[in-house]
Length: 576
Image (cartoon, rainbow, N blue to C red; front, side, top):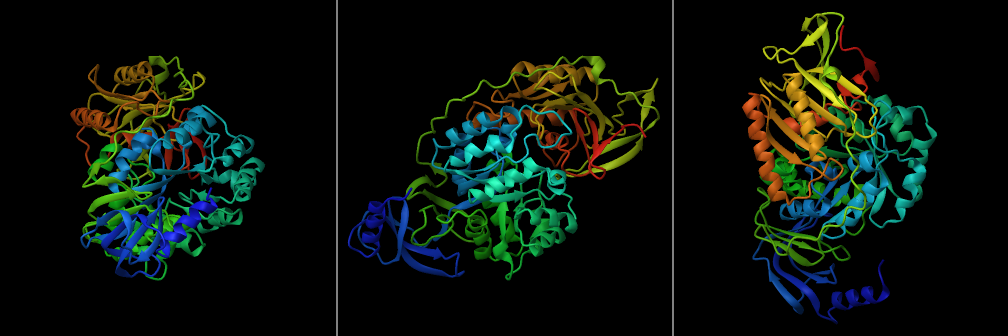
């Protein structure tokens, strides 16, 4: 909340009656409103920019040495949990990449732990400089086609709007509830609008006619475009379009041709889901900006998409620009082509210089809930897949895509029981309900992982986060599942009857308590272990597997209740 005295102090600096806290000299300012680049001083008081011009009095003078001065980058849609760290640790990774603000949907932890999970994310984020704005999860559970750990009705979400960092309703992925006019879903939308919030869409696989349902109830954004044509459909419908480049959802190059000089103000960037190792190797939104520039987008336009466009999309009026009255979230860029960041300021304080954090590690918030116990009584008999014929519906995994193919293939069956064929890359996939001990187990067939002798398993399985595993034998699948159960959640690779690598995720089976440096090393070991059991390359096997359980993304997916066909929006038999 702004106070009169604070505004008086800012005005005094802006008209040269008082000294600034910080003045940045000799910088080339990128104006995201006009598209111009010009020289000028930037004066900062109490974390806000109070003037652009000529200022010579300040407690601290920073010489930009001719570098470009741009606003801090904004990730318009990200699930922090996909990086497997709490928000405070996530900030340690993002700030050196120039990301000073994120808009997140904590529906991963909410689907496990409900409102307490959301509260933990908000509390933990408050311990770091990174601004984390929260869109409240709209779909907990995501669909009625799987079992999750919590239910959040409109009445459960309503009190959370009192938090200053809660700004809207997150991706509405339960499209059938919108189309059918279900009262509780529409009440969530009404409540978000009542509190001045934006409502995010989730238009995966939706036709132009389907989009009308979204628009009719006030949904105004989407991040699920995978082609330029889809992006244009959403643009023409009046949506803000978030172009995604994450670990699995790598859609930027396919959607970028939709962006023109006339319409670029309606586009922004997001990562959605990106693992720590990819964030460290590639970057975050800075990677999206760099990739866009390398593929023909004007550098200033790309910066606008990463800053003011995202702020406008989410109705965040005081971030996204280097201009008076805006929060002093500022990046120093050596050049505009490679987007090389030399310094990051957050609220007028230097937090990163030459890629090195200026502050010590942040204190993490206490986990305000006992992470739910993993409950299941899985036996080898539960993994058996009986089929009436030797032809089956097979999930065709597509590398670096959230979508799958619906394949129908000849399989090997012995006495009516499916037999894994590593020669044909037909592996067994299993989803085990872990929240309530229902005993529900879904068993299917997947193609694309190339596992020859072993299995992988994880408690990260979007969006209900049951246990999901894939492997070449029931014994290895069972061992991997038992191991992550004993860890209290996590990821494991099993190689011929032995655990080859693992990562414990004790917070809700989703997040680690370790610093990101240790997680990166664990992920390296997991990837090496996977390549020891598979020749498949060019994709992340663990996050890819976690998305094979998400029934709101086409085409075939597996939940704890069975094989789901998106085109029919219902379950089908594995056997044909």
